[in-house]
Length: 234
Image (cartoon, rainbow, N blue to C red; front, top):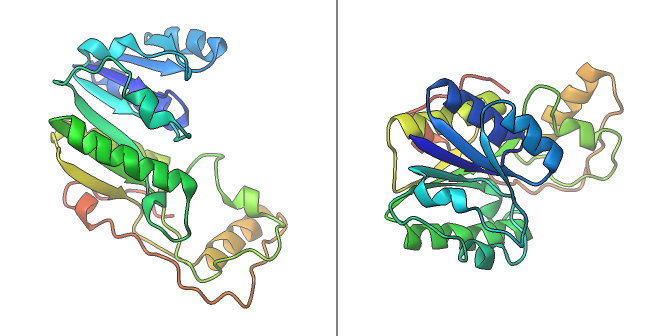
């Protein structure tokens, strides 16, 4: 199949490599010329993309994996693209669509999800939790910070290996017409999870607001586990 990965960032480029190894024809987009050259050296067809351009490569793609972080006006931009209505659109969304805490990007994503559902016969929406893996961990950014909210909130994270695994499972099993919540199995509190990480890395510990007793949100991955079980324990 020809698969367009619009947004060849950390997740997108890894996914493209794995799909290419399964003999799919891969095309995609990036925002910089240096990244374009690097990706082309790996055998991908790559277009530069910004808010003034549209990707013509989606015209004949069997699957379009729409993986671009949300920004104001993005939906209107998507609506200008030369879509092939026969393509299967896999929209990469986020658990930030849930309104706790309120997230401007979550509201944008929710509107884009509704557009995907109403505009394409074949669609799948993947709502990823927070991504981590290799040297990318949100604990780095919380190290040493003070008066952080949400000490009791459960974390809803997913390892990059499972991001790739669940996406490939969706493609292999042709799972369409569903919204998939892709998060790991374990949900320690923010305070426990990030304090433990900083302890292990011997970096400054985060300090959470002791007066914040809000409970947060716990995202269920039951739908995901009906066809894919996470491999990495957080």
